[in-house]
Image (cartoon, rainbow, N blue to C red; front, side, top):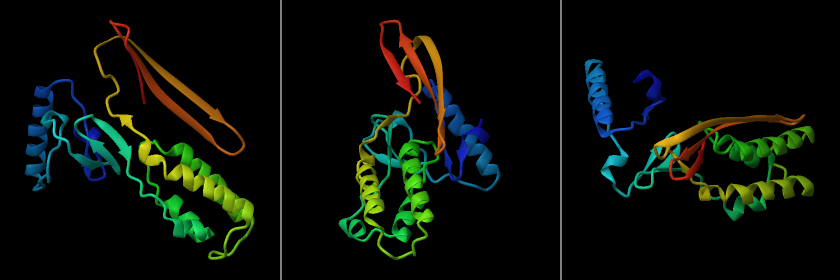
Length: 193
């Protein structure tokens, strides 16, 4: 179970009970101790603190058990001088291991493709049409910190569970999303991905 929970230097897992969590933590500490590795810290929703912590380059708010993209707003300086170098740097800095930002990153890559087709120099300002598209991208980018994703896939004991998969493609891009819909005995419905 530990192997399936490791991503780069994070261990992330979910458990239905506190006992399962305690057992996993104890076994993990033992395994890593035998390899002369020591974890820096454990964080759980069980502590009910109001902290935010980094997990997979996302901000994890313990109390609400929510994930938010960690995105810095783009300053007006960058907007004033939109170049191929600045825009590519911005897109490359958007690391998204679980796909929350995929729609915006795809839009940015489409714009970047148009910039490459124009064969522009790295530090020349972009032509008006491309600069307008980049400005629109930057507007969307600066709103990314408003995105909140519940970490829990199944937030209650469901009476019904449905797995939905949707895929689409065009000449420009393709994408797939898989999400789970749970229905509770009291008619509550939850949709998470």
